Image (cartoon, rainbow, N blue to C red; front, side, top):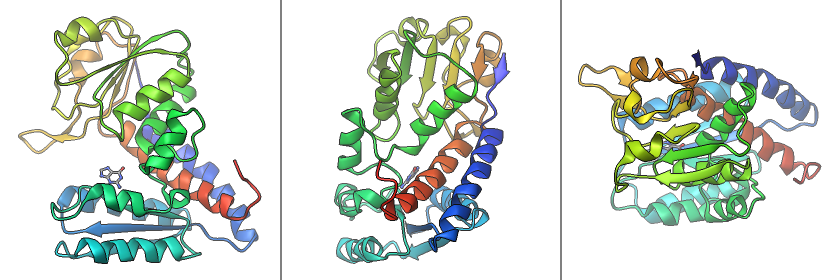
Length: 285
Ligand code: GUN
């Protein structure tokens, strides 16, 4: 059994990005990433600190715009528009979740799709689902990179994604389909989950329930990707997979922490560099 080292792969990815940033700087362009953080949700604050640290270590212009949770939807839309217009900003995201009085869909729609480094805008989702992605949601994108790095063949394999969220489950299933896997999406209403997941050569788990997936859910030799980030009762960070149990039968497994999380962040940085490169007009992919 091999643990997939997301931390090491993220570091390697960032080393490659440093070269691309250098090339951009020689042309007078510094990649700029703006993150709008509304309110004081502790998990969001931690995620945003991580993004800021990555962006700074790569030599980006990094703006963290912290706003009070009482901000109105109109004021927040104005801020988004301000960064949409800012030529020094190539990547823009609004950290989720947002307070209840703000409509997340309206905010996502307001972000310029060219700067939408999260890949959440319906235009980017549309390009992805049509098979011609421009910006890809960072978590599934990072997972595809892990498969590549570890030479995990997807062609013709049975892949099962547990979870159908717009930002992980659905785009993950699309990317796996594009890689010629045979894909099933299971979710909280699936009956007899273990009988489905036991078929999987590739099992991606994104259900948000601490250590739910034990070896009873997993086929011998399966590749298991754990997207979960939960706090156990003792305050420890745990995934959706019971690692010690599944490690006995999986062929590859991502740890938590140090698996999917660091790759999500690395992909956000990569897409910011890509957006900056595209802004030169030379690399219109
Ligand atoms: N909240 C949790 N994960 C994410 C993410 O990837 N992007 C944004 N914008 N908010 C999040």
